[in-house]
Image (cartoon, rainbow, N blue to C red; front, side):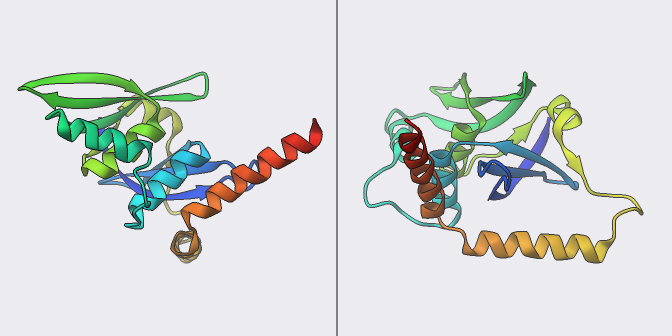
Length: 176
């Protein structure tokens, strides 16, 4: 297992699907995970230190765990099967650990709220991560792309993800 950091949330330009990009804590491997619009908004809101007027689902679950005396110890992206990522949330309660199956997007949204570490199984990283290293990489170009991505992250808001979802629903209704 390797510890991962949230590098950011972006859009897949082709399908307009949100992607959370995880980066190895001590390396330069990136793990892109396609997620849903509500989860992207939940992750972005917390990354940008925004608070909704009322608790969203992940906030509610986090508050419930606190009230029950349970803490999220870590989340782990455990496997990739048939193009679907799987994750586990590890909780600690009454001195014991409990493993709960989860979608990675929900687990990440909860990990941010609990300030819990995020891990990925070595096999997932081997199969799906993108690595930036070697002499073939033009450092100036890489720095430029990273700057563009960071600029996007500075400007994107959770509402951007909600707007795309509403547009898709409108398009579906028009097709019917």
